[in-house]
Amino acid sequence: MDDKIIEKKIDEIVSQFCTEPSVKSTKRGKFGIPRHGKSKALNVDAVQDSLEYLRISVKYILFDLEATRRENKYLREILDK
Image 1 (tube, rainbow, N blue to C red):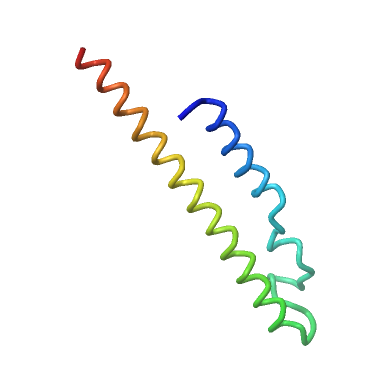
Image 2 (cartoon, rainbow, N blue to C red):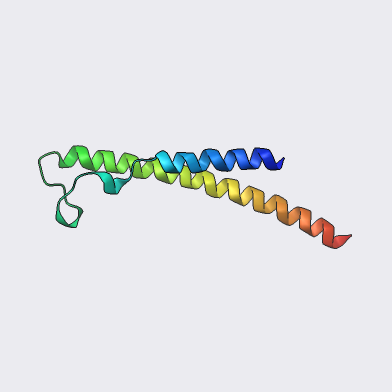
């Protein structure tokens, strides 16, 4: 892969992380317990947010793993020569 493509992908991932709503941003009472009868809706929203964050995190980790494997392969070829 070209360095520009890699940088573009990293920028996309970083922008996705920056735009993700934080679970902490929801209004909650003491100890993270919802205050009003909206607890079920808040819990569903929190779970959806967490799943979306997890999905993006896994994508980033897979991207990083692939890049590391390519780099290791390249460096091993250099050492063998």
